[in-house]
Amino acid sequence: MIATLIILLVSAILFVSGKVRSDLVAICALLALLLCQVITPAEGLSGFSNTTVVMMIGLFIVGGGIFQTGLAKMIGSKVMALSGNSETRMFLLVMLVTGAIGAFVSNTGTVALMLPIIVSMAAGAGKSPRRFLMPLAFASSMGGMMTLIGTPPNLIVSDTLQSAGYQPLSFFSFLPVGLIVLAVGTIYLLPATKMLTPKEKVADKKTGKSLKELVREYGISSTLFRVHIKDEASGAIGKTVAELDVYRNYGLNVLEVRRSSGQNRFVRTVNQKLASPDMVLGQGDVLYLSGEPEMVTRFASDYSLRLLDIHTDEIEGSSAHPSMDFFDIGVAEILIMPTSSMIGRRIAEAGFRSKFSVNVLGVRRKNDYILRDLGGVKIQEGDVLLVQGGWPDIARMKNESANWVVLGEPLQEAAKVTLDHKAPIAALIMIAMIVAMVVESIPVAPVTAVLVAAVLMVVTGCVRSMEAAYKTINWQTIVLFAAMLPMSIALEKTGVSEMISGAMVRGLGSSSPYILMAGVYAVTSLMTIFISNTVTAVLMAPIALQCAVGIGVSPVPFMFAVTVAASMCFASPFSTPPNALVMSAGQYTFMDYVKVGLPLQILMGVVMVLILPLLFPF
Image 1 (cartoon, rainbow, N blue to C red):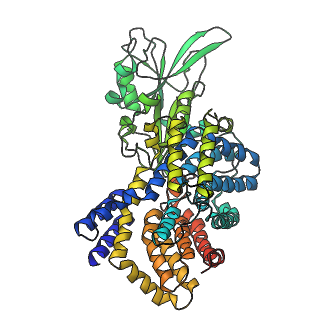
Image 2 (image 1 turned 180 degrees about the vertical axis):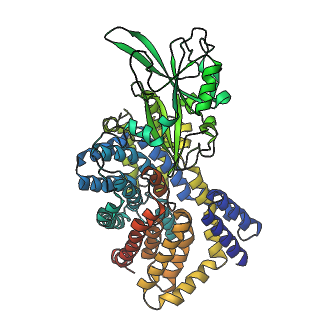
Image 3 (image 1 turned 90 degrees about the horizontal axis):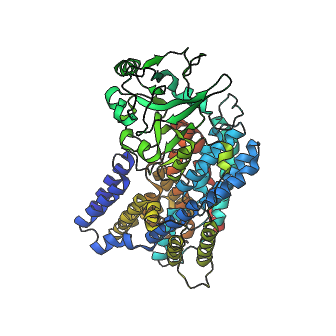
Protein backbone atom coordinates (compact mmCIF):
# COMPACT_ATOMS: atom_id res chain seq x y z
CA MET A 1 0.00 0.00 0.00
CA ILE A 2 2.82 2.40 0.87
CA ALA A 3 4.50 1.87 -2.51
CA THR A 4 1.21 2.52 -4.31
CA LEU A 5 0.59 5.71 -2.35
CA ILE A 6 4.12 6.99 -3.05
CA ILE A 7 3.81 6.26 -6.79
CA LEU A 8 0.37 7.94 -6.85
CA LEU A 9 1.68 11.01 -5.00
CA VAL A 10 4.74 11.42 -7.24
CA SER A 11 2.56 10.99 -10.35
CA ALA A 12 0.10 13.61 -9.09
CA ILE A 13 2.94 16.09 -8.45
CA LEU A 14 4.31 15.55 -11.97
CA PHE A 15 0.85 15.88 -13.51
CA VAL A 16 0.29 19.17 -11.69
CA SER A 17 3.74 20.60 -12.51
CA GLY A 18 3.26 20.04 -16.23
CA LYS A 19 7.02 19.83 -16.75
CA VAL A 20 6.82 16.22 -17.94
CA ARG A 21 4.40 15.01 -20.62
CA SER A 22 1.35 13.43 -19.03
CA ASP A 23 1.56 10.24 -21.11
CA LEU A 24 5.20 9.77 -20.07
CA VAL A 25 4.22 10.23 -16.41
CA ALA A 26 1.53 7.57 -16.82
CA ILE A 27 3.94 5.09 -18.42
CA CYS A 28 6.54 5.69 -15.68
CA ALA A 29 3.86 5.16 -13.02
CA LEU A 30 2.88 1.89 -14.71
CA LEU A 31 6.48 0.70 -14.81
CA ALA A 32 6.97 1.64 -11.14
CA LEU A 33 3.94 -0.46 -10.17
CA LEU A 34 5.33 -3.38 -12.16
CA LEU A 35 8.85 -3.05 -10.69
CA CYS A 36 7.45 -2.88 -7.17
CA GLN A 37 5.35 -5.97 -8.00
CA VAL A 38 2.17 -4.20 -6.93
CA ILE A 39 0.49 -5.52 -10.09
CA THR A 40 1.32 -8.38 -12.45
CA PRO A 41 2.45 -7.80 -16.06
CA ALA A 42 -0.95 -9.03 -17.26
CA GLU A 43 -2.69 -6.48 -15.04
CA GLY A 44 -0.24 -3.76 -16.11
CA LEU A 45 -0.90 -4.30 -19.80
CA SER A 46 -4.65 -4.81 -19.41
CA GLY A 47 -5.29 -1.14 -20.08
CA PHE A 48 -4.03 -1.45 -23.65
CA SER A 49 -6.56 -4.21 -24.38
CA ASN A 50 -9.41 -2.54 -22.51
CA THR A 51 -12.56 -2.21 -24.63
CA THR A 52 -12.92 1.46 -23.68
CA VAL A 53 -9.42 2.24 -24.98
CA VAL A 54 -10.12 0.40 -28.23
CA MET A 55 -13.45 2.22 -28.55
CA MET A 56 -11.72 5.59 -28.11
CA ILE A 57 -9.32 4.76 -30.97
CA GLY A 58 -12.24 3.90 -33.24
CA LEU A 59 -14.11 7.07 -32.27
CA PHE A 60 -11.13 9.24 -33.22
CA ILE A 61 -11.21 7.71 -36.72
CA VAL A 62 -14.99 8.10 -37.05
CA GLY A 63 -14.68 11.75 -35.99
CA GLY A 64 -11.89 12.20 -38.53
CA GLY A 65 -14.21 10.98 -41.29
CA ILE A 66 -16.88 13.48 -40.27
CA PHE A 67 -14.33 16.31 -40.40
CA GLN A 68 -12.51 15.30 -43.59
CA THR A 69 -15.71 15.06 -45.63
CA GLY A 70 -16.68 18.59 -44.54
CA LEU A 71 -19.98 17.38 -43.12
CA ALA A 72 -19.55 18.81 -39.63
CA LYS A 73 -18.33 22.19 -40.86
CA MET A 74 -21.18 22.47 -43.37
CA ILE A 75 -23.76 21.80 -40.65
CA GLY A 76 -22.10 24.21 -38.22
CA SER A 77 -21.76 27.10 -40.69
CA LYS A 78 -25.26 26.67 -42.12
CA VAL A 79 -26.91 26.71 -38.69
CA MET A 80 -24.74 29.59 -37.42
CA ALA A 81 -25.78 31.64 -40.46
CA LEU A 82 -29.29 31.77 -38.97
CA SER A 83 -28.06 34.16 -36.27
CA GLY A 84 -27.98 37.20 -38.55
CA ASN A 85 -26.72 40.26 -36.65
CA SER A 86 -28.39 39.41 -33.34
CA GLU A 87 -25.79 38.94 -30.60
CA THR A 88 -28.18 37.02 -28.34
CA ARG A 89 -29.29 34.71 -31.15
CA MET A 90 -25.65 34.15 -32.12
CA PHE A 91 -24.73 33.32 -28.52
CA LEU A 92 -27.58 30.79 -28.22
CA LEU A 93 -26.63 29.16 -31.51
CA VAL A 94 -22.99 28.91 -30.43
CA MET A 95 -24.07 27.01 -27.32
CA LEU A 96 -26.61 24.77 -29.07
CA VAL A 97 -24.61 23.95 -32.21
CA THR A 98 -21.37 23.36 -30.30
CA GLY A 99 -23.14 21.23 -27.71
CA ALA A 100 -24.81 19.12 -30.41
CA ILE A 101 -21.56 18.51 -32.32
CA GLY A 102 -19.66 17.90 -29.05
CA ALA A 103 -22.05 15.05 -28.22
CA PHE A 104 -20.54 12.96 -31.02
CA VAL A 105 -17.10 14.47 -31.68
CA SER A 106 -14.16 15.14 -29.33
CA ASN A 107 -14.36 18.52 -27.61
CA THR A 108 -10.98 19.61 -29.01
CA GLY A 109 -12.08 18.74 -32.54
CA THR A 110 -15.38 20.55 -32.02
CA VAL A 111 -13.61 23.76 -31.00
CA ALA A 112 -11.14 23.51 -33.89
CA LEU A 113 -14.10 23.16 -36.26
CA MET A 114 -16.25 25.96 -34.86
CA LEU A 115 -13.60 28.52 -33.91
CA PRO A 116 -12.92 30.03 -37.37
CA ILE A 117 -16.65 30.01 -38.21
CA ILE A 118 -17.56 31.88 -35.03
CA VAL A 119 -14.71 34.40 -35.33
CA SER A 120 -15.75 35.22 -38.88
CA MET A 121 -19.46 35.46 -38.16
CA ALA A 122 -18.96 37.56 -35.02
CA ALA A 123 -16.80 40.00 -36.93
CA GLY A 124 -19.22 40.06 -39.85
CA ALA A 125 -21.97 41.11 -37.45
CA GLY A 126 -19.72 43.74 -35.87
CA LYS A 127 -19.50 41.83 -32.55
CA SER A 128 -16.48 41.01 -30.44
CA PRO A 129 -15.48 37.31 -30.75
CA ARG A 130 -14.37 37.45 -27.08
CA ARG A 131 -18.04 37.18 -26.12
CA PHE A 132 -18.39 33.82 -27.89
CA LEU A 133 -15.08 31.92 -27.75
CA MET A 134 -15.08 31.05 -24.03
CA PRO A 135 -18.70 29.83 -24.24
CA LEU A 136 -17.59 27.82 -27.30
CA ALA A 137 -14.98 25.99 -25.22
CA PHE A 138 -17.36 25.43 -22.31
CA ALA A 139 -20.21 24.26 -24.58
CA SER A 140 -17.96 21.66 -26.23
CA SER A 141 -17.39 20.09 -22.80
CA MET A 142 -21.08 20.34 -21.91
CA GLY A 143 -22.06 18.65 -25.18
CA GLY A 144 -19.81 15.74 -24.32
CA MET A 145 -22.12 14.93 -21.40
CA MET A 146 -25.02 14.04 -23.72
CA THR A 147 -23.82 10.66 -25.01
CA LEU A 148 -21.71 7.70 -23.97
CA ILE A 149 -19.06 8.57 -26.57
CA GLY A 150 -19.05 12.31 -25.91
CA THR A 151 -16.04 12.37 -23.57
CA PRO A 152 -13.60 9.78 -22.11
CA PRO A 153 -14.86 10.09 -18.48
CA ASN A 154 -18.28 8.85 -19.64
CA LEU A 155 -16.69 5.70 -21.03
CA ILE A 156 -14.59 5.29 -17.90
CA VAL A 157 -17.48 5.35 -15.42
CA SER A 158 -19.55 3.03 -17.60
CA ASP A 159 -16.64 0.57 -17.76
CA THR A 160 -16.15 0.82 -13.96
CA LEU A 161 -19.80 -0.04 -13.35
CA GLN A 162 -19.68 -2.98 -15.76
CA SER A 163 -16.44 -4.33 -14.24
CA ALA A 164 -18.07 -4.25 -10.80
CA GLY A 165 -21.00 -6.35 -12.05
CA TYR A 166 -23.51 -3.55 -12.60
CA GLN A 167 -25.48 -2.83 -15.74
CA PRO A 168 -23.39 -0.66 -18.11
CA LEU A 169 -24.73 2.75 -19.05
CA SER A 170 -26.50 3.00 -22.41
CA PHE A 171 -25.68 5.42 -25.23
CA PHE A 172 -28.27 8.00 -24.20
CA SER A 173 -28.19 7.44 -20.41
CA PHE A 174 -26.25 10.70 -20.27
CA LEU A 175 -28.70 12.77 -22.36
CA PRO A 176 -30.85 14.16 -19.47
CA VAL A 177 -27.71 15.18 -17.58
CA GLY A 178 -26.18 16.74 -20.71
CA LEU A 179 -29.29 18.76 -21.48
CA ILE A 180 -29.47 20.11 -17.93
CA VAL A 181 -25.75 20.94 -17.95
CA LEU A 182 -26.09 22.80 -21.27
CA ALA A 183 -29.19 24.67 -20.07
CA VAL A 184 -27.51 25.77 -16.82
CA GLY A 185 -24.39 26.83 -18.70
CA THR A 186 -26.35 28.81 -21.29
CA ILE A 187 -28.50 30.62 -18.71
CA TYR A 188 -25.43 31.56 -16.66
CA LEU A 189 -23.08 32.48 -19.51
CA LEU A 190 -25.56 34.64 -21.42
CA PRO A 191 -25.22 37.54 -18.93
CA ALA A 192 -21.85 36.55 -17.41
CA THR A 193 -19.85 36.74 -20.66
CA LYS A 194 -20.84 40.36 -21.21
CA MET A 195 -17.92 41.28 -18.94
CA LEU A 196 -15.61 39.80 -21.59
CA THR A 197 -16.81 42.18 -24.31
CA PRO A 198 -14.50 45.17 -24.78
CA LYS A 199 -16.08 48.55 -24.12
CA GLU A 200 -15.16 49.98 -27.48
CA LYS A 201 -17.53 49.22 -30.32
CA VAL A 202 -16.35 46.65 -32.82
CA ALA A 203 -16.27 48.07 -36.31
CA ASP A 204 -18.58 46.61 -38.89
CA LYS A 205 -16.29 44.61 -41.12
CA LYS A 206 -16.13 41.25 -42.78
CA THR A 207 -13.15 39.81 -40.93
CA GLY A 208 -12.19 39.64 -37.28
CA LYS A 209 -9.36 42.01 -38.14
CA SER A 210 -8.93 43.66 -41.51
CA LEU A 211 -5.72 42.81 -43.34
CA LYS A 212 -4.40 46.34 -42.87
CA GLU A 213 -5.22 46.13 -39.15
CA LEU A 214 -3.26 42.91 -38.83
CA VAL A 215 -0.23 44.62 -40.35
CA ARG A 216 -0.59 47.56 -37.95
CA GLU A 217 -1.18 45.31 -34.93
CA TYR A 218 2.00 43.32 -35.54
CA GLY A 219 3.98 46.45 -36.37
CA ILE A 220 5.10 45.05 -39.72
CA SER A 221 5.31 48.54 -41.26
CA SER A 222 8.09 49.51 -38.85
CA THR A 223 10.34 46.78 -40.25
CA LEU A 224 9.22 47.01 -43.89
CA PHE A 225 11.67 48.27 -46.55
CA ARG A 226 11.81 48.35 -50.35
CA VAL A 227 14.80 48.00 -52.64
CA HIS A 228 14.63 48.55 -56.40
CA ILE A 229 16.77 46.62 -58.89
CA LYS A 230 17.27 49.68 -61.10
CA ASP A 231 20.89 49.40 -62.15
CA GLU A 232 21.35 46.94 -65.04
CA ALA A 233 24.73 46.04 -63.53
CA SER A 234 23.18 44.93 -60.23
CA GLY A 235 24.52 41.65 -58.92
CA ALA A 236 20.97 40.54 -58.07
CA ILE A 237 19.85 40.31 -61.70
CA GLY A 238 19.60 36.72 -62.90
CA LYS A 239 19.87 35.26 -59.41
CA THR A 240 17.14 33.40 -57.58
CA VAL A 241 15.91 34.42 -54.15
CA ALA A 242 17.51 31.27 -52.74
CA GLU A 243 20.89 32.14 -54.26
CA LEU A 244 20.84 35.56 -52.60
CA ASP A 245 20.26 33.81 -49.23
CA VAL A 246 19.51 37.16 -47.61
CA TYR A 247 18.25 35.63 -44.38
CA ARG A 248 21.50 33.88 -43.59
CA ASN A 249 23.73 36.68 -44.86
CA TYR A 250 21.77 39.70 -43.65
CA GLY A 251 19.01 38.45 -41.34
CA LEU A 252 16.37 39.76 -43.77
CA ASN A 253 13.17 38.18 -45.06
CA VAL A 254 12.13 38.76 -48.68
CA LEU A 255 8.36 39.06 -48.29
CA GLU A 256 7.32 39.71 -51.87
CA VAL A 257 8.46 40.95 -55.26
CA ARG A 258 6.58 43.54 -57.31
CA ARG A 259 7.17 43.51 -61.02
CA SER A 260 5.81 45.91 -63.63
CA SER A 261 3.86 44.26 -66.44
CA GLY A 262 3.65 47.34 -68.62
CA GLN A 263 2.20 50.83 -68.34
CA ASN A 264 0.80 53.62 -70.39
CA ARG A 265 -0.50 57.07 -69.58
CA PHE A 266 -3.81 55.67 -68.38
CA VAL A 267 -2.98 52.28 -66.82
CA ARG A 268 -0.07 50.91 -64.92
CA THR A 269 0.03 47.31 -63.72
CA VAL A 270 2.19 45.80 -61.02
CA ASN A 271 2.20 42.04 -60.43
CA GLN A 272 2.47 41.06 -56.79
CA LYS A 273 4.38 37.79 -56.27
CA LEU A 274 5.47 35.86 -53.20
CA ALA A 275 9.25 35.55 -53.11
CA SER A 276 9.57 31.81 -53.78
CA PRO A 277 13.12 30.38 -53.52
CA ASP A 278 13.32 29.64 -57.26
CA MET A 279 12.10 33.06 -58.44
CA VAL A 280 14.65 34.65 -60.78
CA LEU A 281 15.07 38.39 -60.21
CA GLY A 282 15.24 40.88 -63.05
CA GLN A 283 15.84 44.54 -63.67
CA GLY A 284 12.99 46.72 -62.46
CA ASP A 285 11.89 44.35 -59.69
CA VAL A 286 11.11 45.82 -56.29
CA LEU A 287 11.84 43.63 -53.29
CA TYR A 288 9.89 44.05 -50.07
CA LEU A 289 12.15 43.24 -47.13
CA SER A 290 11.63 42.88 -43.41
CA GLY A 291 14.52 43.32 -40.98
CA GLU A 292 16.98 45.72 -39.40
CA PRO A 293 17.52 49.04 -41.25
CA GLU A 294 21.30 48.81 -41.22
CA MET A 295 21.21 45.32 -42.75
CA VAL A 296 18.85 46.51 -45.49
CA THR A 297 21.29 49.34 -46.29
CA ARG A 298 24.19 46.89 -46.40
CA PHE A 299 22.31 44.47 -48.66
CA ALA A 300 21.35 47.31 -51.04
CA SER A 301 24.98 48.48 -51.17
CA ASP A 302 26.39 45.00 -51.83
CA TYR A 303 24.09 44.38 -54.80
CA SER A 304 23.86 47.94 -56.17
CA LEU A 305 20.19 48.28 -55.30
CA ARG A 306 18.27 51.50 -54.85
CA LEU A 307 16.77 51.86 -51.38
CA LEU A 308 13.39 53.52 -51.85
CA ASP A 309 12.27 56.08 -49.32
CA ILE A 310 8.68 56.70 -48.24
CA HIS A 311 8.20 59.32 -50.98
CA THR A 312 9.18 57.13 -53.93
CA ASP A 313 6.79 54.85 -55.72
CA GLU A 314 7.93 51.55 -57.27
CA ILE A 315 6.93 52.96 -60.62
CA GLU A 316 8.21 56.49 -60.70
CA GLY A 317 5.84 59.33 -61.20
CA SER A 318 4.00 59.57 -57.90
CA SER A 319 4.70 59.19 -54.21
CA ALA A 320 3.72 56.14 -52.18
CA HIS A 321 4.53 54.82 -48.74
CA PRO A 322 5.88 51.28 -48.51
CA SER A 323 2.85 49.27 -47.52
CA MET A 324 1.47 45.77 -47.53
CA ASP A 325 -1.10 45.47 -50.29
CA PHE A 326 -3.41 42.51 -50.71
CA PHE A 327 -4.24 41.59 -54.27
CA ASP A 328 -2.74 38.24 -55.24
CA ILE A 329 -1.09 37.85 -51.82
CA GLY A 330 -2.82 37.96 -48.44
CA VAL A 331 -2.12 37.48 -44.75
CA ALA A 332 -3.84 35.43 -42.07
CA GLU A 333 -3.33 34.39 -38.47
CA ILE A 334 -2.95 30.73 -37.53
CA LEU A 335 -3.37 29.45 -33.98
CA ILE A 336 -1.05 26.60 -32.98
CA MET A 337 -3.02 23.62 -31.61
CA PRO A 338 -1.97 21.77 -28.41
CA THR A 339 -1.50 18.61 -30.50
CA SER A 340 0.59 20.33 -33.18
CA SER A 341 3.74 18.58 -34.40
CA MET A 342 5.22 22.06 -34.89
CA ILE A 343 5.58 22.68 -31.13
CA GLY A 344 9.24 22.93 -30.14
CA ARG A 345 10.47 23.39 -33.73
CA ARG A 346 12.13 26.55 -34.98
CA ILE A 347 10.16 28.50 -37.56
CA ALA A 348 13.01 28.12 -40.07
CA GLU A 349 12.79 24.32 -39.67
CA ALA A 350 8.99 24.06 -39.80
CA GLY A 351 8.79 24.21 -43.60
CA PHE A 352 6.17 26.92 -43.95
CA ARG A 353 7.73 28.19 -47.16
CA SER A 354 8.68 24.83 -48.68
CA LYS A 355 5.41 23.04 -47.83
CA PHE A 356 2.83 25.81 -48.02
CA SER A 357 4.60 28.62 -49.92
CA VAL A 358 3.94 31.12 -47.12
CA ASN A 359 6.15 33.43 -45.07
CA VAL A 360 5.87 33.90 -41.33
CA LEU A 361 5.79 37.67 -40.70
CA GLY A 362 5.37 37.71 -36.92
CA VAL A 363 4.43 35.75 -33.81
CA ARG A 364 1.90 36.81 -31.18
CA ARG A 365 2.70 35.09 -27.90
CA LYS A 366 0.12 36.10 -25.29
CA ASN A 367 0.44 39.91 -25.37
CA ASP A 368 3.91 40.06 -26.92
CA TYR A 369 4.74 40.39 -30.62
CA ILE A 370 7.92 38.79 -31.98
CA LEU A 371 9.16 40.25 -35.27
CA ARG A 372 12.94 39.90 -35.14
CA ASP A 373 15.01 36.80 -35.95
CA LEU A 374 11.88 34.77 -36.58
CA GLY A 375 13.77 31.85 -38.09
CA GLY A 376 15.23 31.00 -34.70
CA VAL A 377 11.98 31.34 -32.72
CA LYS A 378 10.73 28.03 -31.30
CA ILE A 379 6.99 27.51 -31.79
CA GLN A 380 4.97 27.10 -28.59
CA GLU A 381 1.44 25.88 -27.90
CA GLY A 382 -1.02 28.77 -28.20
CA ASP A 383 1.24 30.90 -30.42
CA VAL A 384 -0.52 32.88 -33.13
CA LEU A 385 1.54 33.20 -36.32
CA LEU A 386 0.91 35.88 -38.93
CA VAL A 387 1.56 34.26 -42.30
CA GLN A 388 1.72 35.76 -45.79
CA GLY A 389 1.09 33.93 -49.02
CA GLY A 390 -1.13 33.47 -52.03
CA TRP A 391 -4.81 33.12 -51.17
CA PRO A 392 -4.96 29.50 -52.45
CA ASP A 393 -1.93 28.60 -50.30
CA ILE A 394 -3.45 30.18 -47.19
CA ALA A 395 -6.71 28.32 -47.88
CA ARG A 396 -4.71 25.08 -48.21
CA MET A 397 -3.37 25.56 -44.67
CA LYS A 398 -6.88 24.93 -43.33
CA ASN A 399 -6.37 21.24 -44.12
CA GLU A 400 -3.73 20.98 -41.37
CA SER A 401 -6.34 21.09 -38.58
CA ALA A 402 -4.23 18.86 -36.31
CA ASN A 403 -1.47 21.49 -36.29
CA TRP A 404 -3.28 24.84 -36.38
CA VAL A 405 -6.52 26.70 -36.90
CA VAL A 406 -6.71 29.50 -39.48
CA LEU A 407 -8.28 32.55 -37.82
CA GLY A 408 -10.14 35.52 -39.24
CA GLU A 409 -11.49 34.09 -42.46
CA PRO A 410 -13.81 36.47 -44.31
CA LEU A 411 -17.44 35.71 -43.59
CA GLN A 412 -18.18 34.76 -47.18
CA GLU A 413 -15.18 32.40 -47.25
CA ALA A 414 -16.33 30.66 -44.07
CA ALA A 415 -19.70 30.04 -45.72
CA LYS A 416 -18.11 28.47 -48.80
CA VAL A 417 -17.80 25.01 -47.37
CA THR A 418 -17.05 22.38 -49.96
CA LEU A 419 -19.20 19.40 -49.08
CA ASP A 420 -17.26 16.38 -50.27
CA HIS A 421 -19.23 13.76 -52.21
CA LYS A 422 -18.36 11.29 -49.44
CA ALA A 423 -20.22 13.32 -46.80
CA PRO A 424 -23.55 11.44 -47.15
CA ILE A 425 -21.69 8.16 -46.73
CA ALA A 426 -19.96 9.48 -43.58
CA ALA A 427 -23.33 10.57 -42.21
CA LEU A 428 -24.88 7.14 -42.88
CA ILE A 429 -21.96 5.36 -41.19
CA MET A 430 -22.24 7.62 -38.14
CA ILE A 431 -26.01 7.10 -37.88
CA ALA A 432 -25.68 3.32 -38.31
CA MET A 433 -23.06 3.22 -35.54
CA ILE A 434 -25.33 5.13 -33.16
CA VAL A 435 -28.33 2.92 -33.99
CA ALA A 436 -26.27 -0.21 -33.35
CA MET A 437 -25.20 1.17 -29.97
CA VAL A 438 -28.68 2.36 -28.96
CA VAL A 439 -30.96 -0.49 -30.11
CA GLU A 440 -30.49 -3.36 -27.68
CA SER A 441 -32.10 -5.90 -30.03
CA ILE A 442 -29.17 -5.54 -32.45
CA PRO A 443 -26.65 -8.19 -31.29
CA VAL A 444 -23.57 -5.99 -31.69
CA ALA A 445 -21.40 -4.82 -28.80
CA PRO A 446 -20.71 -1.04 -28.69
CA VAL A 447 -16.98 -1.51 -29.22
CA THR A 448 -17.71 -3.68 -32.27
CA ALA A 449 -20.06 -1.06 -33.72
CA VAL A 450 -17.41 1.62 -33.30
CA LEU A 451 -14.65 -0.47 -34.90
CA VAL A 452 -16.87 -1.43 -37.85
CA ALA A 453 -17.72 2.27 -38.35
CA ALA A 454 -14.02 3.21 -38.19
CA VAL A 455 -13.09 0.61 -40.80
CA LEU A 456 -15.97 1.67 -43.06
CA MET A 457 -14.78 5.29 -42.88
CA VAL A 458 -11.45 4.17 -44.36
CA VAL A 459 -12.82 1.59 -46.84
CA THR A 460 -15.38 4.03 -48.29
CA GLY A 461 -12.81 6.82 -48.60
CA CYS A 462 -14.35 9.14 -46.00
CA VAL A 463 -10.90 9.01 -44.42
CA ARG A 464 -8.42 9.14 -47.28
CA SER A 465 -6.08 6.34 -46.17
CA MET A 466 -4.92 4.28 -43.22
CA GLU A 467 -2.11 6.79 -42.73
CA ALA A 468 -4.71 9.57 -42.51
CA ALA A 469 -6.73 7.44 -40.08
CA TYR A 470 -3.73 7.02 -37.79
CA LYS A 471 -3.18 10.78 -37.84
CA THR A 472 -6.71 11.40 -36.54
CA ILE A 473 -5.95 9.47 -33.34
CA ASN A 474 -4.72 11.45 -30.34
CA TRP A 475 -2.17 8.89 -29.21
CA GLN A 476 -1.18 10.91 -26.16
CA THR A 477 -4.72 10.54 -24.77
CA ILE A 478 -4.82 6.83 -25.62
CA VAL A 479 -1.48 6.05 -23.96
CA LEU A 480 -2.36 8.22 -20.94
CA PHE A 481 -5.66 6.41 -20.43
CA ALA A 482 -4.32 2.90 -21.06
CA ALA A 483 -1.31 3.39 -18.77
CA MET A 484 -3.36 4.90 -15.94
CA LEU A 485 -6.04 2.17 -15.87
CA PRO A 486 -3.70 -0.24 -14.02
CA MET A 487 -3.33 2.44 -11.32
CA SER A 488 -7.02 1.95 -10.48
CA ILE A 489 -6.36 -1.81 -10.27
CA ALA A 490 -3.45 -1.14 -7.88
CA LEU A 491 -5.59 1.19 -5.74
CA GLU A 492 -8.24 -1.49 -5.35
CA LYS A 493 -5.78 -4.38 -4.99
CA THR A 494 -3.79 -2.72 -2.20
CA GLY A 495 -6.85 -1.38 -0.40
CA VAL A 496 -6.11 2.30 -1.04
CA SER A 497 -9.51 2.89 -2.70
CA GLU A 498 -11.24 1.18 0.21
CA MET A 499 -9.23 3.22 2.71
CA ILE A 500 -10.05 6.57 1.02
CA SER A 501 -13.70 5.68 0.45
CA GLY A 502 -13.96 4.41 4.02
CA ALA A 503 -12.62 7.70 5.35
CA MET A 504 -15.13 9.62 3.23
CA VAL A 505 -17.99 7.36 4.37
CA ARG A 506 -17.06 7.78 8.01
CA GLY A 507 -16.72 11.53 7.64
CA LEU A 508 -19.68 12.28 5.39
CA GLY A 509 -21.79 9.17 4.87
CA SER A 510 -23.45 9.21 8.26
CA SER A 511 -25.11 12.53 7.45
CA SER A 512 -26.75 11.81 4.11
CA PRO A 513 -25.95 10.21 0.74
CA TYR A 514 -26.37 13.72 -0.70
CA ILE A 515 -23.52 14.99 1.49
CA LEU A 516 -21.28 12.04 0.58
CA MET A 517 -21.98 12.48 -3.14
CA ALA A 518 -21.29 16.23 -2.78
CA GLY A 519 -17.93 15.33 -1.24
CA VAL A 520 -17.12 13.01 -4.16
CA TYR A 521 -18.12 15.73 -6.63
CA ALA A 522 -16.06 18.41 -4.84
CA VAL A 523 -12.90 16.25 -4.68
CA THR A 524 -13.22 15.29 -8.36
CA SER A 525 -13.87 18.89 -9.42
CA LEU A 526 -10.85 20.12 -7.47
CA MET A 527 -8.57 17.44 -8.91
CA THR A 528 -9.62 18.29 -12.47
CA ILE A 529 -8.29 21.84 -12.10
CA PHE A 530 -4.79 20.37 -11.78
CA ILE A 531 -4.98 16.96 -13.49
CA SER A 532 -6.58 15.94 -16.80
CA ASN A 533 -10.18 14.86 -16.63
CA THR A 534 -9.28 11.41 -17.97
CA VAL A 535 -6.81 10.70 -15.15
CA THR A 536 -9.18 12.17 -12.56
CA ALA A 537 -12.01 9.91 -13.71
CA VAL A 538 -9.76 6.83 -13.66
CA LEU A 539 -8.71 7.53 -10.07
CA MET A 540 -12.05 8.69 -8.66
CA ALA A 541 -14.46 6.20 -10.31
CA PRO A 542 -13.49 3.21 -8.11
CA ILE A 543 -13.44 5.42 -4.99
CA ALA A 544 -16.93 6.74 -5.75
CA LEU A 545 -18.13 3.18 -6.33
CA GLN A 546 -16.75 2.06 -2.96
CA CYS A 547 -18.40 5.06 -1.25
CA ALA A 548 -21.82 4.11 -2.63
CA VAL A 549 -21.36 0.45 -1.70
CA GLY A 550 -20.16 1.48 1.76
CA ILE A 551 -23.48 3.15 2.63
CA GLY A 552 -25.59 0.64 0.68
CA VAL A 553 -26.95 2.88 -2.09
CA SER A 554 -26.89 2.74 -5.89
CA PRO A 555 -23.49 3.74 -7.32
CA VAL A 556 -25.01 5.20 -10.51
CA PRO A 557 -25.55 8.78 -9.21
CA PHE A 558 -22.05 8.70 -7.72
CA MET A 559 -20.62 7.64 -11.09
CA PHE A 560 -22.43 10.50 -12.79
CA ALA A 561 -21.07 12.88 -10.15
CA VAL A 562 -17.55 11.79 -11.10
CA THR A 563 -17.99 12.17 -14.85
CA VAL A 564 -19.77 15.55 -14.63
CA ALA A 565 -17.25 16.95 -12.13
CA ALA A 566 -14.33 15.68 -14.24
CA SER A 567 -15.67 17.27 -17.43
CA MET A 568 -17.16 20.53 -16.11
CA CYS A 569 -13.90 22.27 -15.26
CA PHE A 570 -14.02 25.93 -16.27
CA ALA A 571 -11.91 27.78 -13.69
CA SER A 572 -8.57 27.40 -15.47
CA PRO A 573 -7.46 27.80 -19.09
CA PHE A 574 -5.25 24.73 -18.72
CA SER A 575 -7.76 22.26 -17.24
CA THR A 576 -9.06 21.16 -20.66
CA PRO A 577 -7.65 21.45 -24.23
CA PRO A 578 -10.66 23.53 -25.46
CA ASN A 579 -10.11 26.11 -22.70
CA ALA A 580 -6.46 26.45 -23.70
CA LEU A 581 -7.28 26.53 -27.41
CA VAL A 582 -9.53 29.60 -27.25
CA MET A 583 -7.28 31.49 -24.83
CA SER A 584 -5.02 32.95 -27.53
CA ALA A 585 -7.78 33.39 -30.09
CA GLY A 586 -9.92 35.34 -27.61
CA GLN A 587 -6.93 37.04 -25.96
CA TYR A 588 -8.21 35.97 -22.54
CA THR A 589 -6.22 36.19 -19.33
CA PHE A 590 -6.08 33.60 -16.56
CA MET A 591 -8.32 35.82 -14.44
CA ASP A 592 -10.98 35.86 -17.18
CA TYR A 593 -11.43 32.14 -16.61
CA VAL A 594 -11.51 32.60 -12.84
CA LYS A 595 -14.11 35.41 -13.02
CA VAL A 596 -16.40 33.63 -15.48
CA GLY A 597 -15.55 29.94 -15.09
CA LEU A 598 -15.17 29.45 -11.33
CA PRO A 599 -18.73 30.57 -10.44
CA LEU A 600 -20.07 28.34 -13.22
CA GLN A 601 -18.07 25.38 -11.94
CA ILE A 602 -19.48 25.88 -8.42
CA LEU A 603 -23.03 26.45 -9.73
CA MET A 604 -22.80 23.27 -11.83
CA GLY A 605 -21.77 21.29 -8.73
CA VAL A 606 -24.70 22.56 -6.66
CA VAL A 607 -27.21 21.81 -9.43
CA MET A 608 -25.82 18.32 -10.07
CA VAL A 609 -25.84 17.31 -6.40
CA LEU A 610 -29.55 18.21 -6.28
CA ILE A 611 -30.55 16.83 -9.70
CA LEU A 612 -28.59 13.57 -10.07
CA PRO A 613 -30.46 11.67 -7.29
CA LEU A 614 -33.73 12.68 -8.93
CA LEU A 615 -32.66 11.27 -12.29
CA PHE A 616 -30.89 8.22 -10.84
CA PRO A 617 -32.33 7.46 -7.37
CA PHE A 618 -30.10 6.23 -4.56
